[in-house]
View 1 (cartoon, protein in one colour):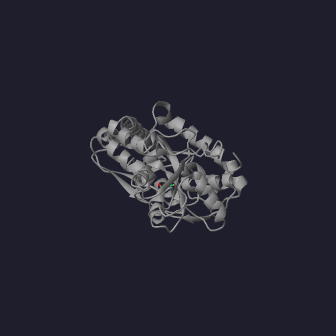
View 2: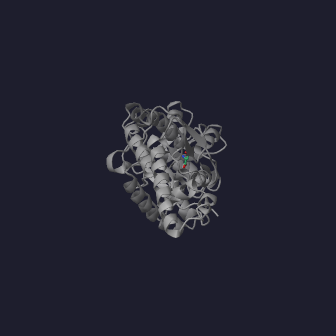
View 3: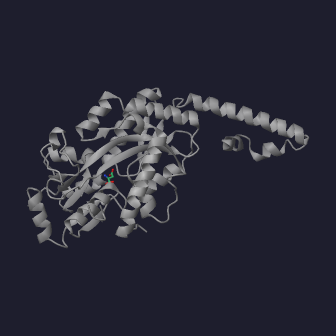
Length: 355
Ligand code: ASP
């Protein structure tokens, strides 16, 4: 492939004015009182953390538009998390725009109490490379809870596109140089990365059209406002089944087994040797979320990822739900760091920046 290829709890629980009111006691007494206060505060916070989720709803922020692939996995996961989290409601908040950076930043700034979480994808690894000024740091502003799934992508076209297979699509792109419109979900999105690789491999330049997610992009594709899109199967499968879009290729090295997708050739077999893009999703909490809450959330994630209904829904849309090691927070953090290391040179060499 070518180039494109705690103690803070104490501070918050004992406000400074209360600490000042201890000023009449001796230094030694002060130290003891402060220590006792810290122990009591930590114990009371611990008790709250143990009670989590205490019947309160949990919000999962999705940094892309409703109806798209990230939204799909988050909504399926929200449903699967309910049972292991004592039946509390888990709701999705779409904070879309600017290639996922708006939603990711929202969670970085949220209260670290476990009631605001983030589901996002490879943008966790690409936005630190593509945006030189970000209000968050993916390494230090988040608690990693674990990975969720791997999702292949598909190259799809508007229904009126005259090409009926990948070879015809290639010819059509060649004949329409400079006129082809390719949608994406913003710089750093999965569709953007796939589109970059696709153009590089075809040695074709297309006009990219950014949206707040691939749900609005696919609506415009169906309406014929854009020509092409590379998007996760979790969004494209039902459109392919309903013949609303034209499928040209999948981005895995092997054909997929999902019934609606099994006859679609791979890009690799269609001549773009080695072309492979799969998109992972992960679950995160703001930094400083108490350890017992993180443990509870990770336990719930592990149960949710084994939920037969969740697995069935995801597999029906071409996704592979992950298990074992990959659902461990430390392993997921290592993985995201390796993804940053993988995309950095590629994107820097391509000279693509969002700002
Ligand atoms: N599929 C989108 C992407 O290209 C994101 C989304 O809408 O979920 O990154």
